[in-house]
Image 1 (cartoon, rainbow, N blue to C red):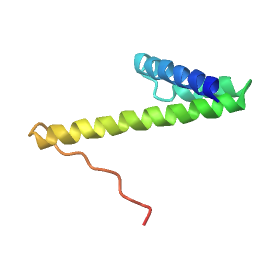
Image 2: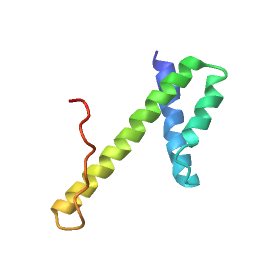
Image 3: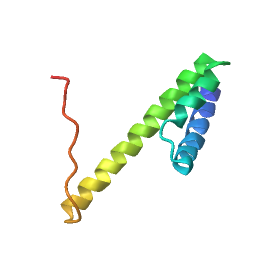
Length: 85
């Protein structure tokens, strides 16, 4: 549903900015609970958007640190162990 995804992604972007400003890396959970009281469907779309945004942020941070280490500016970051095997 296009509207639901648009609403969820917009709220996730704003929440990410608020989390940065407030220094609260769990604020998105509070927003999720507020949404869930009225629309569990929007809540799930929002949490999906948040998980994607948080994972992307983490991935970009890892990439930036790895490139910096490769270029001689800092230690190489450790990737999480693959527990799927």
